[in-house]
Image (tube, rainbow, N blue to C red; front, side, top):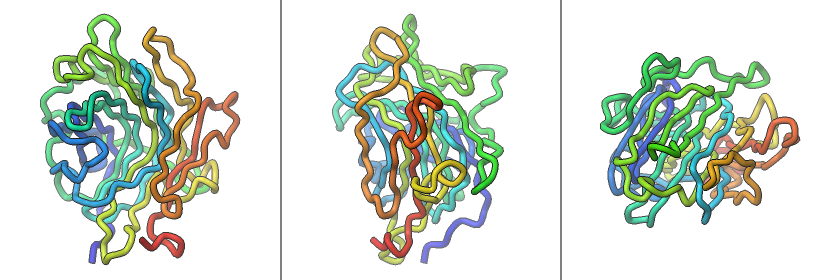
Length: 284
């Protein structure tokens, strides 16, 4: 029987390059596994085999030079060896050679992982920043209590073509363009914001790994996790509010999403997302 991890895992910044997503203990990580389909992560040896479930929004079929949002920070319960993500990701290329750049936070149930933090080839950290990969994200939000969020952005430099990670308006580091194929000279063709979990179906039932705060979006501010102030950067390098977002909610009885519950004129384009996983309404 899989047990929920009792060890306190920090939260992490996640960054991946060239068709990869990585995992790490709750701290800032950089991960890389070449030639892995972004939406078929069971092929990635850094993530356990299982069903990947999403509560996210996105834009596809465009030309995107970056994206950003304020991401509410929580400490969800995660069943070992699963993982729970809250992130922004941009992608380009066909499935067999997909490139992705991702940033956000995660909590996992691992005792160890593959390549993470500054041990991975590729990401170039900026000196003298408050947000060095490998450090914990703290404090975290509490149910019916104080809320904390972090502003994260990924932006392509219009001169060098490198992809830069910004946190709270600070440059944290960059991925040199030569790491990529499809994201080297060109823009991303899709951008997504939201939550993701890995479900290994312990005991032949749905996992109890939580997404976001572990509560459904209908509970609103202070209880459910949120993204606010969603922005993307167009091919003219203008920052814009996304419109006509496509929702991807793979199992709404387990994890759901509600778009623009709060007034966009006050907090920008926004959504609440997440859920508890296993419950009377979420068995499989």
